[in-house]
Amino acid sequence: GRSTMSGSLFFVKPAQNTVLLCSPQMTKLAEKVVKHTRNVTLGSITWKKFPDGFPNIFVHDVESIKGCHVVFLASFSQAGEIFEQMSVLCSLPQYAPHSVKIILPFFPVGTMERVDREGEIATARTLARILSSIPPCRGGPLDLVIYDIHALQERFYFGDNVIPVLQSGVPLLLGKLEQLALEMPYDPSSANDKFQWTIAFPDMGAYMRYNHMFTAFDTIICMKVRQGDSRKITVKEGIAKGKHCVLVDDLIQTGGTLIETGKALLDLGAVSVSAFCTHGVFPQDAWKKFVTGPFKKVWITDSCPVQASLVNGKGPFEVLSLAPLIANVIDMETVEQVSALQGPRLSRL
Image 1 (cartoon, rainbow, N blue to C red):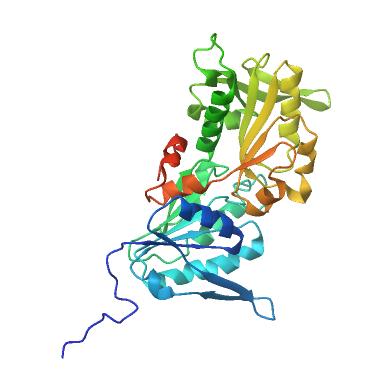
Image 2 (cartoon, rainbow, N blue to C red; image 1 turned 90 degrees about the horizontal axis):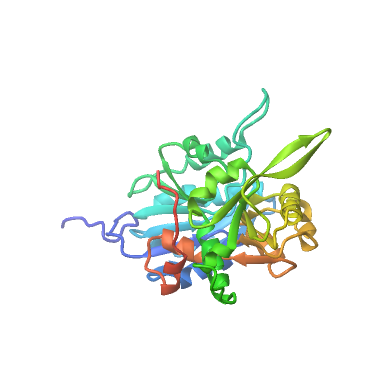
């Protein structure tokens, strides 16, 4: 009789469902994403190590991947985690998914995107080349979704197997400010309560990157100027006096400059100063200096899940989950609350 491939692992049916897989660090965020979507199944991976320390990984129920859209929620916060997750990502196409989308909320080496002298290594390019080595699947090149990558030009480091989809966590801040504005006492002298907020940028780079997302707000541009042997934060443009200022940038590392900028705005007469940064990295417990710092609120996302879990609710910190935005990017129908968070998005390339 005529042979059939109906029992073959590689017989691909039209995609109907989405399977969400994740690294162990992203389990909680993945569970939140599923709650914001429909027709998304949370898959299971067992992450173990052999006695020699190398990964011992098992993807459960790989038959369910066949013909489906597969989304992998990744976290590369530690160098050793990259090899483990790349082992899974390079293997997924052999199970015949219809498409593969990688959600990497934080691109960890984004600040090392260029070299200033011979001998330095641009590790951002290295990681981009590693990700570009993932084989394509039936649906073609993989989508790689990154939130607030440090330098937009890093998109050009990726090869043809990967399509960078650059997103921003700023809609979470916009939603939070709208919520707080509604909770504020009504001011008849203000045509719109959200104008009580003034968006401040710690440098010109942050202004160029994010200003177009805050066209309805007054803005302040800060900068460092040299005074003798020291450098002082000053305001290049805008008025801080009498304003509720929110500093906006892509990430917090040690936080020294951000804290200095917050203090400078208060010295210039700001009523209060808060901050929003998508990625809270906080090496060597740098978050502790914010507990007694100048900020009323410090909003970060859960793009770095370990750090976000550590600081949430401590001092001025509040974590705004990326879950509804990630659910939207997966292109699934989301709950009604997500529509309120949709805002300006960086273009897909």
